[in-house]
Image (tube, rainbow, N blue to C red):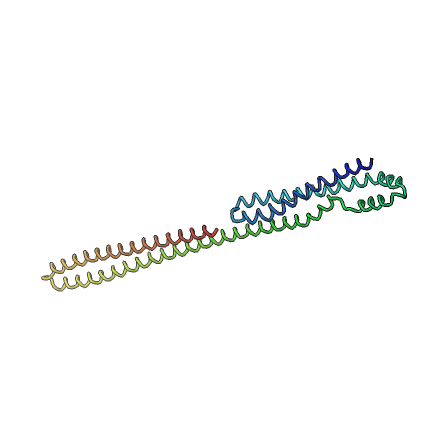
Length: 249
């Protein structure tokens, strides 16, 4: 009768706890330690968020399962206490060695209680992954904010340079207009004084106006080419910096 009771107790206490212990050992040694080290360069953004959420839920599930097993073992030991007491009362004094063996076995901590020593390590693993997940989110947000700020600064700089080029072109055109207006006024004064040279002066005026038109066109063409080349350089620079930032991310 005693042998049957012991086998029944062993099947309840040893088998589940051994399975649970092996499961936790494999989970801690492989999934939490090796798995993360081997795959930490592969997980990206949303995939990391999903796996972190699943991992935390799984660890909390293990925690609740161990707590339930501990309570169950406590109730089982409490229900079996009267039967154990009657059993020890019926044993004869001559079986002292058996009594010592039973007393020793009585002091052994149940396997499920031994498994509770893994709880601190599981909780530390949860905290580590929570902190790492928070840190990765913060770094990603900082990188995005830095990139957006850089794009805004480049845009402001680009607009400022374009406005400066436009102002320079307008100033050059105004100077040319004033210059040729002065020449035209001088020629008109000469025509008033010398009627005989009217034809020649007219030709000079026409030539000056034509030259003025050609000069304005050439100057505007050169300025527009410089403006276009500057815009292309700015756009290529922005694309290059964006490409470098995307590589770093």
